[in-house]
View 1 (cartoon, rainbow, N blue to C red):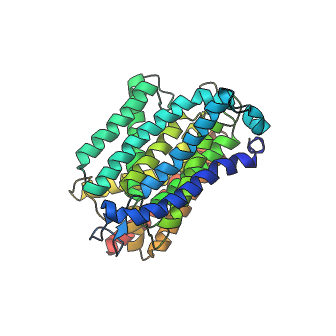
View 2: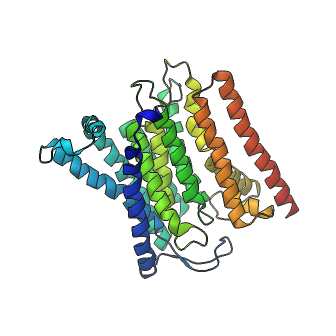
View 3: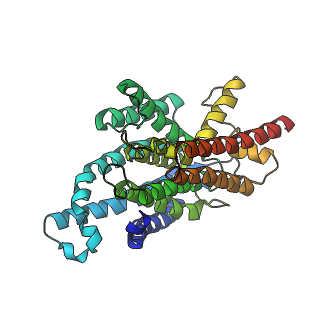
Length: 375
C-alpha cells in the first residue's frame, strides 16, 4: 500500500532519469542537425519551423543509464565489494529480489533498444511501413514466446492469449507513435499513463505476494522521470521531438509493463481489476482505432500519415493546439483514474466505471464528428 512505499523510493527512481533526460536532450538538440535528424514542416504536420529529432535517444539513455549504474552497484554489493549497510534498511530487503529480476529487466531493455534503433533509423533515412511493422511484430512475438510475457485474460487457450498479447504490444507501440503529432502530446500522455499505472501497482498489493509491485512500479517511475525531463524540451513551442525512436521505445516499455504486472488472479474475488490497463490506456487506443477507421472509411491506406488524429480533430472543433493537448491530458486522466477505483468497487461498480469511460469517449467522438462535418 502507499504507506508502505517510502518517499525516498519515489524520489530515488524519478530523479536520475529526469536529470539524465534533461541534460542529454540539450546535447541532442545541438548535435541532431549534424546527424541529419531534422523534422521539416510539411502539409500533414503542425510545426512551422525545422525542429531537431532524436529526443527518443535522450529518453532511452535516461532509462538505460540509471539501470546500468544500479546494476553495477548491485553486483558490487552482491559480491561483497561494497557493504549493504550504506543502503537504507528497506532497500536491503529487496537486494535478492532485484538480482533475481535483473535478467528480465535487461531483456526488456534490449528489446526496447532494438525498436528505438529502428525508430532512429526511420527518423534519419525513412523506412517503409511493412519493415517497421515486421520488426514490431518480431520483437513482440519474441517477448511473448520466449519470455512468456502474456496478458492475463482468463482464457485457457494459449494461442489466443499469445495473439492478443502480440496485438496488444504492437497496438501500444503504434498508439504512442500516432499521438506524437503535437508539442508535448505523446510524451505527456505517456508520462500520465506510466504514472497512473505506477500508482496502481504501488498502492494495491499483488494478489500472490500481498506486497506493492516495486519492480514494475519502479521501472514505470524511471520512465516517468525520463519523459518529464524530455518534456522540458518538448513543451510548446517544442525545441526537440522524440521521433519514432522515442514513441516506439516508450510504447513498448509501457506495453511490457502491463503484461508483467499482476492486476488480479484466478482466485481473486475482484477479477475486474484486470481492466486497469485498459482504463489507463483508453485514450491512446481510442486515437489508434479512430484514425485507422477514418483512413479505411475514406479508402486510404491505414498507414498513410495525415491529420485525422484525435488532436487534429479537436483543433477542427475550434480549439487551439494547446487546448487540444490539455483536453487529451484531462481525458486521459479521467479515464485513468477509473483504474484506481476498480480496486475499491465490486463487479457492478467496475461495470459502471467502464461505462463511464465509454461515455466519455463517446461524447468526444460525437463532438469530433460534428467538427469534421462542419469542415
